[in-house]
Figure 1 (cartoon, rainbow, N blue to C red):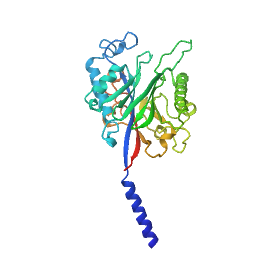
Figure 2 (spheres, helix red, strand yellow):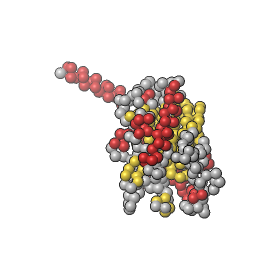
Figure 3 (cartoon, rainbow, N blue to C red):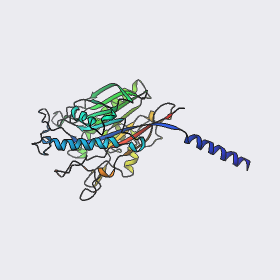
Figure 4 (cartoon, one colour):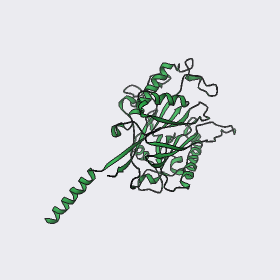
Length: 344
């Protein structure tokens, strides 16, 4: 009986001790914002459809509504846990730095004091990737845009998005973020696969280069990969793994969600999970005064989902079947949390 009492008291003390632990939580998010174009015609890119006279009648009113919508989404990702917007945000399908500037200047985000890292990519449509960061918590110390060289069958260049790499200090800790938008499946998954494998190889080289001088480097790669977590580029080139126990591999928390049937976009009633994070195993380790991965998810509040009709359950996008619907994007955003125990 005495042993049982001692065991119970010890159990209660442990529980009380654990309940008093406090953590800092940082949200990392990624969102394919689907064609965030301004209304001006850029003579160097194929953006003619996204002008007031173009195919989509892309007026200033429609552009402003898109900014309203995307800024609302970004302001709410992770807020259920942190009561604020994400600390780091990767974006793709932004036309230029000005549209990103307009986004962070919107009243939904203005007081968050986001900084922007952006480079113009050679993509034929003029769409780029970008990184937003809260200046209060992250200090960029390096940034570079890595070109993905692709060629068509006739040895003609196939221009696509660069991979953006940003290094810096997150609350005193070195972090690296890679923002991706891999080549699409235009022409079919099999035919276009070599281009995404090339993107995976470029990502692998970047990861290896960053890890060369620090084998415990904290590196988070994120983006719209136009591949699912189980496809060749991820499993065989990058060698990602969805099991936490495999701490010698890049960990991909989205793989478990995918295997449960979750997705971030739908096409002909088939769901894909193209929007992903994967990161170095150092972020799975419990280390004193260091950030570690907690969990990841897909952000899909009711207003981002088509409520009824042919596309019920799909992401509520700006255009559907060529018609303006005034929605948000054809992708759901994704997020992950980093946590660090606060020492008393």
